Length: 221
Image (cartoon, rainbow, N blue to C red; front, side, top):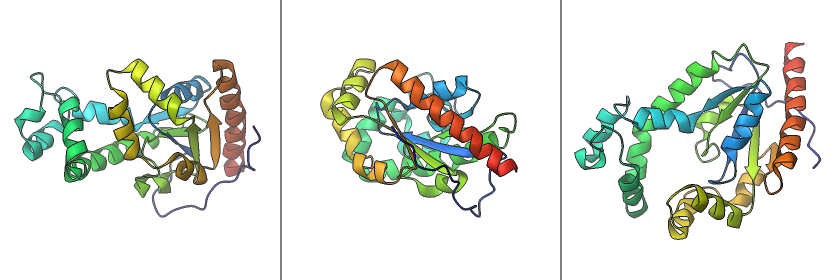
């Protein structure tokens, strides 16, 4: 797969990270976490907003008190974590519930992401993993390039069903809350096709790694 010429986007008004930052995104089940681990093994600094969200809404997480106040104790498990299954059901039936939850979590996730990015000066570049990067443009000023991990919708559904207890109908409902595949690809600077073998995926990651090193060098010079 040929890659477009590597150039960085114009600087934004937000404080830039100390190293080049690549925004990594993709639909559910596309393989974002796998790609992130491959970049990490090559020396990239990884900021995973999904992991941050789970910490904030996990047992005694920093967001639990606000979630309980907004939605009630019924949405908190006995060990003090967000009941994700119950919240997912509410969001599918009440669009306002998703907005209310985002208003609680997103400012916290964004602040932690910025703080972690500021500590990435030990690495040649950073990978900011944001599943809804293109749906939530607040993160875009932090990144120089958008990297999309792509695969077919049928592969997305198959992978999510294999790794979780979600049924096909639930997965398709999640997909409707995400930007379309075509829309995501139209906004990408770089694309990794995750439809083949692990070796093919590793090769694509390594090729982009080499280009991102060049981006760091061009900024340094």
